[in-house]
Image (cartoon, rainbow, N blue to C red; front, side):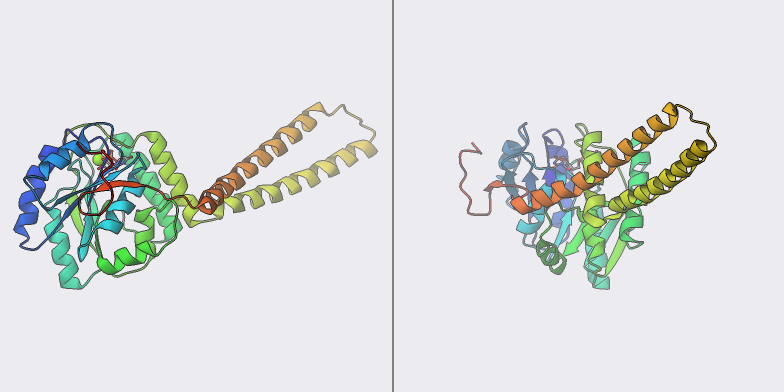
Length: 311
Ligand code: UDP
Ligand code: MG
């Protein structure tokens, strides 16, 4: 299962490398290409490629819904006993799929993580920010989450059904998968360079993924508000004592500085706490609206109307 957003340049290379691997497995398979509302010719090209590769299936989302939503669409529509998700840009080497399948069957595992043994081809900015992200996430979900495991992984049918049963609005699969606690294994691989095109994960999307990851797994940020409140009360008490002291000592200073400091400090605390509440309330609101995370416009193996989306 491969989410794709504006990946037309990389498609021919992807097919060239993926097909021999899958044909070599000696099993029946399908390749679910999820077009995440690309504005380029990704869907049209996949559609053309299908003529020569019947196992290739095209699912077209009506609009760009983001990587995790595209993963949902692919995951919940794929039909195999095992489902592997990989990036379209060949950063996850398709050859690893054979190893993952072997590991899953030998160990009767429900999850086999692809773990990046070497990220030297990523930019240093990406590596540093990713390093922070994984550190933070491991604190949140616990040690079960392997270091360097992204969205390149194999899941069993049982695991896919378990994920489908979660009512999550903004699922972050790399956290949900370890959290469910199914038996898992790992296969190391070397992260390659993007084969063509540019990254579809700008900084804003990385920030959103991090916010979703934190908010969907812990209420700890709300506790920050409690701590700040406690600190504020202590500071306030100290200032009351100091003011009274000054009053009784007859030293009636104008006290502009302390006034200003207190106003600024408490103002900032209140804004911060409001913002934290807002993050959670916003997600509760989104969940109560119950809008689906994505809309499928076309599925080459399903019964949706084509709607003139492919011609
Ligand atoms: N992707 C997607 N929807 C988006 C953004 C990205 O389906 O809105 C896909 C993209 O086509 C690729 C995968 O997610 O197959 C990972 O994206 P990318 O390789 O650009 O991320 P990076 O490797 O730079 O983190
Ligand atoms: Mg990539």
